Length: 422
Image (cartoon, rainbow, N blue to C red; front, side, top):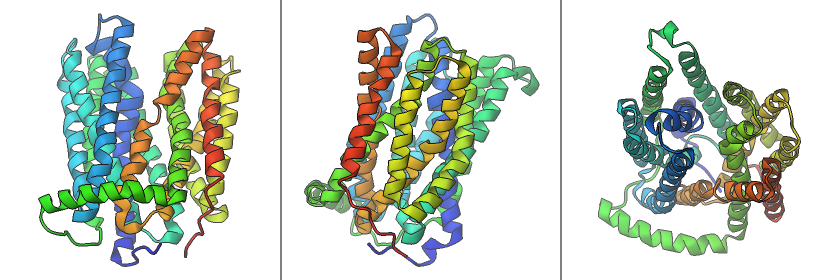
């Protein structure tokens, strides 16, 4: 697959593309993984039974994921036809920024409005990432795919981690920032995420360009896009290696995302302090920055597929170790281990997939890729939850994730190692 080698591959365009990950990762870190779940329970849904607030939050996450699952492939097909990848990205990004900025305005007890703004903001975040991924083929050359993809995740870990560290400091010592209490600090943190995300979206808006021409009107693009989508379902089935890889990716990334989303809950179930869990999350972010870069070089040296296998093996060992840990120091050690491989498995999966697909349909094919990504962390939590409930032990629950990593590795072994083009 030949890629563009014109001015779109300039360093300016590449850096602008990377900075978007730096900006939007603040939402994933501070809002999704950090403050929203805790603030929802303790502030917006204060007084609501814990099981009910958990259900409402779960439904909110599921609804946002479902919307993107339905929209991503369709909009991806339209974007390919209309050469509108960047325009769709900017639309979803600004939608996410606006809704995130609305969260501080939600009063205590108004959990319904918090859910509405959170769902729309998450749709904006997830939708923008789908088109962000598809633009990678326009900002670099085939030989640099692994490095640039890894750098994107590394920038995300560092950018999201830096703002999250500031936000955690604000909540732990609000008086240092002239704030009344931790609740005011959290609300201000949501606003800082919106500003951060917006600022680092602007370089991409100005300096990243996609090739191709818009073909006809928007409505014509919609009709052709839907037709192309129908054809792509059949084309993916014909592209056997793409088809198998997508199922492999679905399995192992489900395990990865389940660990990300359930790690804090698992730590709490073992009796660990909540502040220590936040510190562990920060550790993962900052370890993930250099580790993602290192995996990019590893992928360039030994191939993305082999790098993915290494990461899957590491995750299997992490799951086994997590099922046996008893001390807080062991939790910190596992946080470091996760940071070492999390960005690597994500970045190499993206660059490997980019080599498998036709460039002229990158947005549409990445729509399917991200659709499976949004389905991820659905099966894993169910397996983990039911196994834990039936056995009475969260340790048994987390061991079920081994099945996802084993299945992913077996499927990936049936996909060839794509040659690294120069």
